[in-house]
Image (cartoon, rainbow, N blue to C red):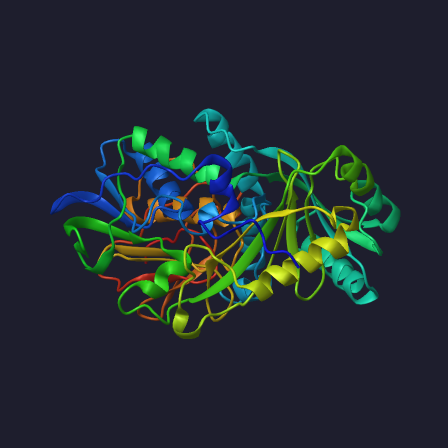
Length: 454
């Protein structure tokens, strides 16, 4: 096997557009209303919605590397709006209507991201398309059918089963027996989106400092290697890099995922593969893959490589190991034999945050005014839009419509439960203010729904 022409260097997406010029580091001690740790999608969406809610807020985003250095600039470019976690685990702390509302809210994030990109002139190669998840063995077909039935039970009626002929007429993958088709998704160039979002929030007046590592944080202050920040509210939006923060090494597991990308393929190759609809593409293998056809006619293939580095270690600038590259190349050749002769131009990897229950977390402690969001387990764009907005809601409590739902039950720091005071149906996509008073913190383990006060 020939190694890719380029390894690491963050990701191919940055090779495509060039690494950004670094913003200045923090220039000594400062103060702000809200300090956001981490300049990925979650932190930047939080800053965006906070500034929309209250333009007078002084918001400072602190980033150790550069905005979009982590998973936000390395992922597979799937804007799918899907619900990737256990519905049953969310149901255990909520209600069926709330979970259904959350499913619909997640589906709605596709339109929300595209709306913001269009409104803010962010060119991110966004192309509306379908998601195609193929099955090439009887076991995979059974999993596909079960997944479609499960999604439709929870109200995701855009998911359908299609037969082998329909699937292969879209993308001619050898051995296809059928596929799950999900409508209403989009393909994205992730680095262009996160770079554009950083540009937009900075133009709104948000301060972004790069090359500034956080060494410690607590109520009212963030300590960095460049100075002290005094902040009334602090949001931790560090996803897979959370393990690098003091005292949080075991909070979420930093799991590795990796990708390769081919050279641009010729028309003769595409005539054999098909893929004229640019569907975001995966399969139902237990060790699943995720692929896209890029704007310039390349194929990206992603999958889990070496999933975990000892001691919660982080990759070195996105450089994958040789065995991971070999496995990804094997998937490429198996699904797209017409591309077997294509050069592999780039291989890269990155970490994603995985909690013990494989469910996302958003929380806010009103006593310390420290909030956090993460543990998306590789679910990409759509929940980060939701959770960034939810951070904005909780930390400030401004009243305006946002692309979110409510109606969940959450567990408070004192062990009690509280339920949404709104309509509970999720259809209005509004929120209520964050908790106030002497409560000892609110942790929303299974969702992004805002809570009522006691």
